[in-house]
Length: 456
Image (cartoon, rainbow, N blue to C red):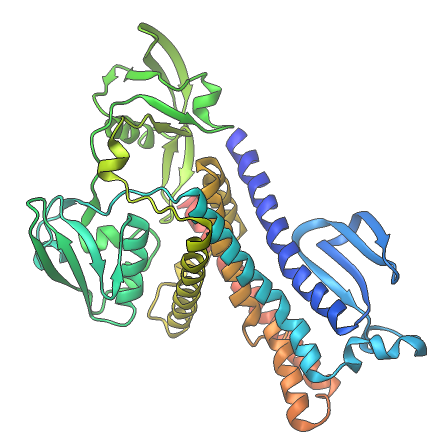
């Protein structure tokens, strides 16, 4: 229960930040263009807090439904406008000003993503070097010549240093190629180039949680003693009074010699209470541990307690692929990451429309909330990465030419510019209705994916 509450709070915090950023873009652009702002609201529905401020007495609100927000501008189409304020109405502005106001929201999402990535890289991005673990016989990886403990240093045109970078590079490369070129360094130090044949399998491999299984290998994990490191707030480990430095000896009579064995045991026993034997300050103690649960991308439920391993000295120097930059260098790295993730997102959306990429990648609020809580529990850098990815997704989504979204409104303005007069009210109404139907279908499918993951 504690983790559920933590996930909900992390989700609301994330949505609040991203909505505020998006709407502030519209707000500041409208103010700059001289348009009168009537209301700036975080959330929809009835306001639960309101303050009027400024010469225009703009209403700043927190509303009861915290799943979005809006900026209400003075507009003749939404009510009578006093003659003295006509020049400040949105619909009276030049087309270029209206387009600028509309795109300012998504633009702020991209700018925020750059900031989030910048701060993440300044703090340091944790990650393990992409070293291959077990390789399944007769699999795509095995047939290509990938072997145990090969380290991936390049995928296609990408140089990679961590598993996160390797996964993103694999997905990006296979969207346009029937074969994935990989540059590897074997455990013996020999460099080699291999080609993974993925022709006809892109849809399968892009299903959540199917990439490694489909390619036929797993990430390698070094042996680490089963000693508790960081304890996440609100998790099962904290509830059981487990502490940093506790060594896990056994659970329900099953003994553990390394951290991986302990993790595998936890994952195999979601929602179960086990009798834990630990060593604390040289003394053996017994503790009851109620293992929590976590839903993976493929919908399967695994056990989770909210704890990390205590990392031995020298581990990071040998196995870490952490990325950390100075404040100035991080600007270019963050900008490049924002661009590459934006391009990858657009390509994935395009391939989902054509049916080449699995639509199971569409997530709704349930799945997003789970990952918000998980990323927040892991650490600030992970949460910043989550915020950046979702901010980019919101920016791209809002630029789609769907009438109810910013991109659709931009299309209306461009049509007006070309025709020399606004589209008819009927045409705009039909567009709005089609846009609503489209969004309802997409959200319904996202909820379906979420519920399928929960109940499968």
